[in-house]
Length: 288
Image 1 (spheres, rainbow, N blue to C red):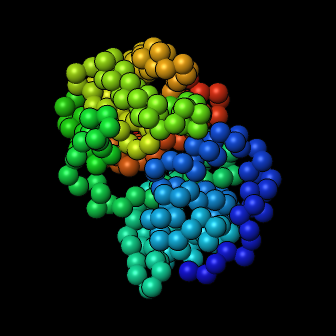
Image 2 (cartoon, rainbow, N blue to C red):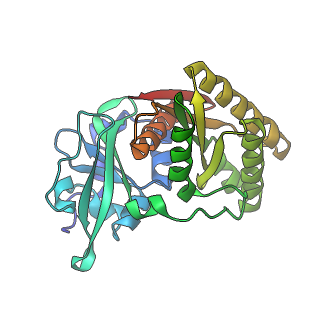
Image 3 (spheres, rainbow, N blue to C red):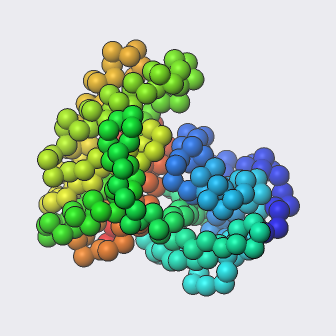
């Protein structure tokens, strides 16, 4: 893998990026979901978060400016005009090693000239499902089994809600990680207190949670439930002195859609859109 020719800050000054709200970049950078940003036409890397760089055994700065195909063995092209497409590609690693990853791409929120690309190790999709020590919730390895179970139990649609807590970084910066941990525990309890018995809430990582919602007959069912979740989080954390709410992105999936990875990716991008719009709200994407 050759080093990029341009500095990180130079790419960040690109005209395309100036249009993207800073809060979207902050959420992207700290997300535990490995993601890179590509220019849609040239497929050059505009940015990469730490999780993606770690997956590729490199740094974000070393990736910026590279053409996407320089990272991978020639294979099926990544989708650039089918928002819900995904492919498997083999990626080069340092030392001549390779890793097979699933790749899904969608336009970055409202900016159609940028692609948000999510990478996932397919071996994680069938891993065991441990519990998170802090919140007691299932961890991200539980997501695929939970979606499989949801799609088997009903002919109605299934929704995947991706939640990112608003203003959480400010809590850690000003009150410390002990307060941050308390807010995470309170938020987890609040979510569990308002979801239905058939729903599954998962701590995806950091201040992000995923809720799998089977049996969705109408989109209004989702918006009512996510509204209850946000009110519950705000109430549960009020005693801390911090106003904590959630930006929630939801993908509504037909039961005949077997691309769970695309559903999560679409929910994640809808969450970015909610965050960019000011947070404390829900944005919904329909996955056909």
